[in-house]
Length: 321
Image (cartoon, rainbow, N blue to C red; front, side, top):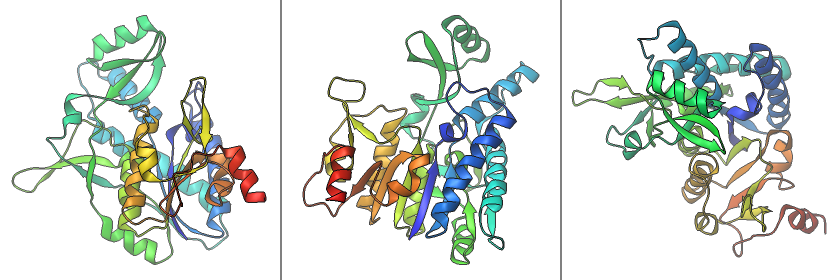
């Protein structure tokens, strides 16, 4: 099968972990080992998140030149190169000798009239205490939201991807059997002017939505979104919380999920499956093979007889019976 893997930023940098090169090397090495195992039986194309990293670079840039705000498209390109390099190197170390791998910077077109530019929702960077968060927000003119009680995090616009630029070279490499790493951080956000010229914009595109667009364009069989949560949960944080093993797009779309975290994954999964993909999967990095083979995580598919809201435990028991 051809699988587009959307590797979550938190899979590369754990929550609460110091944002160091050593930590990212270690986490990418673990991720590459899991992906290499999957690549033994399937063709994979890798995309990745960049929320923690682009936030760090924005802070570094603001500290270096307090009167200058570095635009997010340039910071996004920097993180795409940095993270892509780490993934490519560790994948090449983990894959059989002779495997070809390539990292591509990927521009993604967005609509300049997208309402997301007036309503920032995408969290990036570290989490701050209330006083530090207010000071940073005032100094850098950044929008902040309360991610958890008393904890603030920067949010930026997250417009929908309209088109992946440079799709032809991506497709040529994929068809040649190269393991391609692309569309990192959702891609570098650009808009098209009246004269046809492209310009970068101040935004971060959701990597899951771009990955769904990429998977559809490459006629992938599976869209696999890896995060730090074992599955999609009904009633998350509530008394009836339970994991969903498999479900149809219509049943999943009828539920409510957080706009800044699981919501985009749900939208991407539904769009990909409705667009002709065999299935979309959501789960943890360490369960990657079990997710694809139906023993863990959540599978979104059209070929279910009825909306399936079974728990993961019930699903596994059914598989074994």
